[in-house]
Amino acid sequence: EAQVTQNPRYLITVTGKKLTVTCSQNMNHEYMSWYRQDPGLGLRQIYYSMNVEVTDKGDVPEGYKVSRKEKRNFPLILESPSPNQTSLYFCASSALPGGEGQPQHFGDGTRLSIL
Amino acid sequence: KQEVTQIPAALSVPEGENLVLNCSFTDSAIYNLQWFRQDPGKGLTSLLLIQSSQREQTSGRLNASLDKSSGRSTLYIAASQPGDSATYLCAAFGNQFYFGTGTSLTVIP
Image (tube, rainbow over all chains, first blue to last red; front, side, top):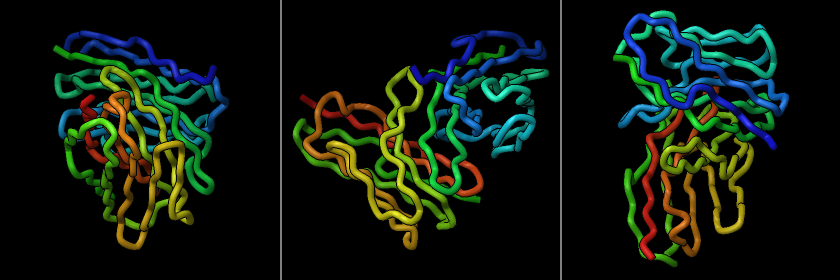
């Protein structure tokens, strides 16, 4: 079954404590992306990756890091989380979105609370 | 920067009604536009993807149209059912994805 798997689904943590949200896809997709979803602001892209070792900033990259060492994995790293990063986070993957375009597959989300 | 707007923010209709959801975008230089459905506590499910060279796409009771020149897309839902209740999001892809804030749809039995 085609899947994008995020872990953890829920996390409550404190300011400044480094955390990583993992994302894995089993569809051999080149394109992977992280979004945050906030009330009234919708989904905003944090970082995306067109392929292994290729990452680019989205709309709201400040305070986040990503890496793409393997095609299937795209972890989101918060080195020093702050309360304004409390949000619902989604990982997504697809074949390369330009040209013919392919629909994105989304994970079920990670609800992150930073106290 | 691309801005994507969805109107209305919320919509409540009786079962069986046909309805139209609207999506507008400011930059017409897009590769494609996608419509998604989001159920509470869940991720997004892709419904329809329209390439920039296409005018519309259909899947079952859903039909999406795209008019790049006017910066608009519509999602038409025929014969709505209570199971269609969800939030519907559109996303325009140019150099990155930009999402609208969604339309929350309630279909009343």
